[in-house]
Amino acid sequence: MFGKRQDGITQKRPAAPAPQPPQEPARAPAAGEAPPPPPLPGDAPAAPAAAAPPPAAPKPAPAAPPVKPAAPVKAKPAAPVAKAEPFQREKSADYYQIKTSIFNALIDTIDLTQLAQLDRESARDEIRDIVNEIIAIKSVVMSIAEQEELLEDICNDVLGYGPLEPLLARDDIADIMVNGAGRTFIEVNGKVQLTNVRFRDNAQLLNICQRIVSQVGRRVDESSPICDARLSDGSRVNVIAPPLSIDGAALTIRKFRRDRLRLEDLVKFGSISPEGATILEVIGRVRCNILISGGTGSGKTTLLNCMTAFIDQDERVITCEDAAELQLQQPHVVRLETRPPNLEGTGEITMRDLVKNCLRMRPERIIVGEVRGPEAFDLLQAMNTGHDGSMGTLHANSPREALSRLESMITMGGFALPSKTIREMICGSIDIVIQAARLRDGSRRITHITEVLGQEGDVIITQDLMTYDIEGEDANGRLLGKHKSTGIARPAFWDKAKYYNEHNRLAAALDASQD
Ligand SMILES: Nc1ncnc2c1ncn2[C@@H]1O[C@H](COP(=O)(O)OP(=O)(O)OP(=O)(O)O)[C@@H](O)[C@H]1O
Ligand SMILES: [Mg+2]
Image 1 (spheres, rainbow, N blue to C red):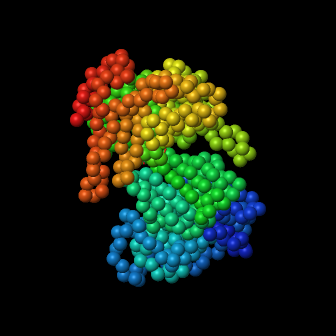
Image 2: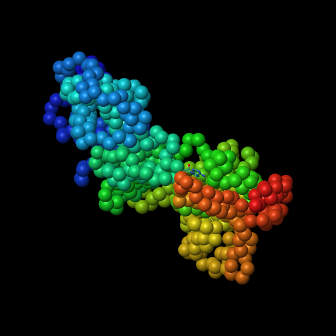
Image 3: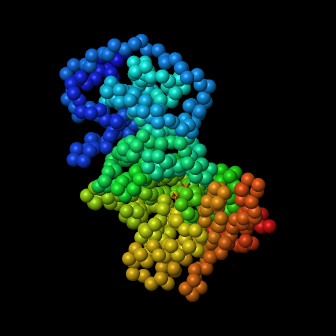
């Protein structure tokens, strides 16, 4: 009964005329309205009536019929869809209408601030009780399965990230891309597909975006429509809101993988051959300076993470990232993260600031999540000045392009250096470029392990140690190919390998991967 917990969750606001009950608990403020404080992580959204005066008297309990689960009127087969993959099912306009009406009644009944103090399970139980009562009172006709689905949706709206929840719960999704309320795409196994997930409207989507970014103390609205954030599980989030995104907010989530991929996993997936993995392991162990290059979502960060596994336990490692994604296992790691400017446009800490600061922190290796600007100069300097074994990733489509991008980043960073000097710096710093790619069948492969040898005239000389050659396609459209060594028996980092007593392993791996 609504009145059964007069002292608790259902104790509610006055029956006096209240402001129009909002559609959404954490609705976006209307123009000119003071924005409500963003809800805290994991909290229920701020109660819409939180700003309203405290109840003068509890709402009289409506005479509710005894609660019993609504009998399934429309006999439906017990659809497993509801539980297993709720987002797969197209929901009718009726469903959304019923949900909105029950949702509004719920919001009107419960005290969200009190709900927020409960743990998730108890909050869910509370919501379940009340939703069941509302369904009974309103005599809504629903099957048990539909009722469960509705309850799940409402709990997600009140306690979590709404329609995104089922996607966030899945481990097989790499990216979630929401293009306005009506279209949500996901990437699974390297392939992008449209889902049936949809938001009630763009206001609900923006609300959920607000809830996400409020966790990192930020807001998205017309005045600051671009925002990077992170979910509590570590997933990387970008939001771009109207008016910059024209058809409703665009939300992009790179899902964090709980089961971190290791080099063995990449071998299992065929991203690299076992011999190639050995070569990478040696490269990581013997402190080569490494640049990981690749297109967007090609697996650069994953590969960087794998490469860090070969860093010794006693080395002091400092990581610099825009959004902390790396998961180093060593004990002596300092993790740094950049900071965007605040609303007044001040307080920004750039990647360059971090990398420069690193140098004063006695690092043995510096790891830069993504090199995209003038910090390239500082990273190269660090590599050149005794921080061997430093690593970074960069967006480029081939090892050669990676080197020329590095050069242009430095040129554009305003360093008045002749290009010959910049190239000398690059040759003197980078030992290895590893190229990652997402192929057209969705698979991710390491396509090149390439050494930087030096300069001849104005040209940087590189040498591939291993490449991935595509040889054909099977009946299912999967690309067939092979990682092959190019026949180089003594790579330029041979002496380093010898110094660390890894040369025999290196020679054996190179030898074994020849045709
Ligand atoms: N070799 C691989 N095989 C299968 N999946 C992979 C592989 N490498 C990475 N992935 C998955 O692909 C997704 C993208 O990987 P990752 O974040 O490493 O890419 P990225 O190149 O760093 O992307 P971005 O350019 O957005 O930073 C992740 O979900 C990751 O788990
Ligand atoms: Mg990345």
